[in-house]
Image 1: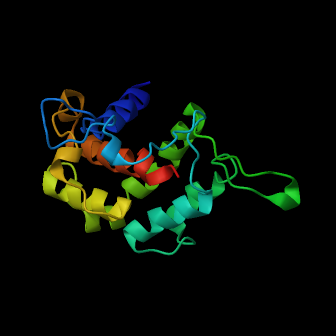
Image 2 (image 1 turned 90 degrees about the vertical axis):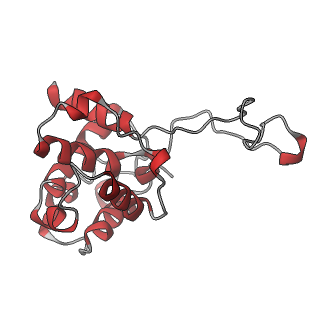
Length: 181
């Protein structure tokens, strides 16, 4: 139960801070402004996960490893439950993001987040906001700005350093920006 609460709290830390149609800030475009061009359609279905092999490759790229590195054994062992396919066995790809799949993804990432390789690359992830930004930028493949992340979570601050490190790692590697198409 504690791990579930911590995971939800960590994911909430990385919530979007932007405001669409902010009338108090003239620099923010209004969605009703006709000069913004045609509106885009937002699908009303569940978010689609990136294919499993893409998510695995992204995790491997963050650590500078190949996908067949033993560090990713748990991810690979859980690949079918994480949405991968095996047509020879009649298992189709499933790219829906469900609570059960989120939990299994986080559980399968725990060995990665607690690994010596991860700690070597990001030694101060639990204590240095700049390192969190660098990690998120590496993981998401773009420059992440400080105002995109929330570092004032009381739940995270109450954890010991090891748990904070793990929760930060899990939050970044489980974020929609990392796993959703």
